[in-house]
Length: 424
Image (cartoon, rainbow, N blue to C red):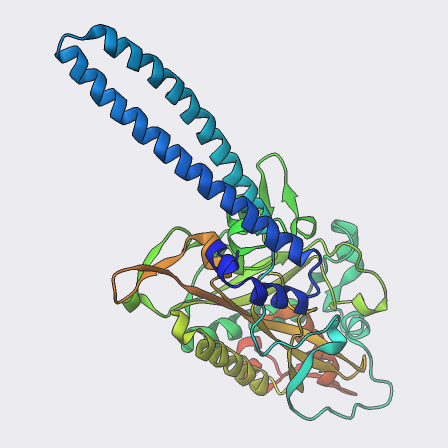
């Protein structure tokens, strides 16, 4: 959530940033924030003055009673009754204005970093790095959903029977390679200094609002209505909310966590061949990395996260590329996002497998996540997160790119985790 003071003092900058995102009603939103805030501040001043006058009269009433002047005291008491009524009305008005301001701020996305280019769709994203050799597959090579059926390692039809489309069942070596990837990712992350954390898979509304999924992504989250809890679409939500309403010390930085969780996304409106198989699921496994950083170090930390994920993909021997997302494709809460994509040779297309983002103070402002700076004043921290990694499309890339006429060859780095070298 953007800070009101920042909007008020940087109206043109905010407008330009929202325009880069193609955010509708940018000017209306900015003017709305300014107007409500001015009304709120003037109401606060009026309330403070009213309360001060009421307190002053109360002291005078006490003196009058003490001096034996009850009639004068009674007259002043009548005035305090009206002042209390005014205070009540002003307090209610102030409360409503604060709610209106908060709800409007919740609708406004983050301001993109200066390096983010304007654009409308993913076609406008910038390719900034590419590595790995795309393999030449044998004639008759198959897409991963056909390989899954051939080797009986993933059963999409069985998942459909049990739950519905988008909930696959992993079997035999398919289940083992899932577990291998999870353990490998966690080991890489903990070796890099991230603290492994196990977190709940359902969160309350305050947690969803704290990281920005609510109200923006409410329609994409599974909601347990009776308890008003949400199934997590990413471990980012529970991990980051560990630090909601927390005041850190500068010596606490960097705060780093990693977690494996299943993730749940309704993915409403996702149909067609491009979402077939593992390409888009309603339930999938993901290992996440989350950082809380000093503002002066957050972009250096973001670069470090990118390098960390590059190292994992190099060990997996997968061809990949990195994109810097344009204003029209960047997430609601992010200031800067890098997407990693793996090339699926059998599908002849790039598959997104990770997003690494710096949210600057946007989430921290919602979370009230602050730290004491050297001057002793509280300041908003910066939050960052990244997929390290999401399993479905990594597995799709491995199955398709590593297939041979004899079977699917497992990358060397995963063999100790899997316990086998080939899927036959």
